[in-house]
Amino acid sequence: MGIYESGIGPNVDSILLSGTRVVAGKIPAQVRKELRTGMKAGVIGVLKRSPLTPEIFYSKSHPHPYTAKEIQRKEREYNAALIKKAFA
Picture (tube, rainbow, N blue to C red):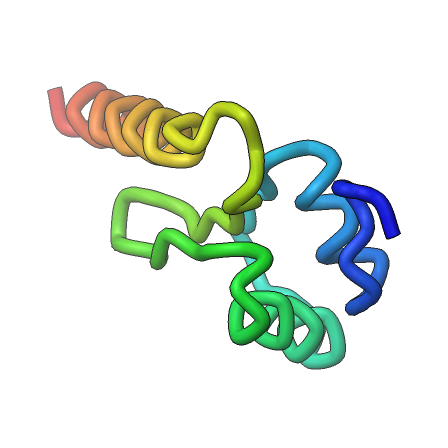
């Protein structure tokens, strides 16, 4: 297996290849189960969802580990700006 192959499934492999996956909606149970298996194996990590930010799965072996935190920060700022604009 290569660096971008986990042997767990195609969803985990795509996160290893791209570095991150942003999840703003619901995930099917089978996909969620596969991602949990990848987290238990220590291959991928997750940044939990909050009211202003989406859930982000990221590769722990990606060369730029802070990209997931940067994506979540940008999403939070964007959503906060939309709320601020709606109530202005």
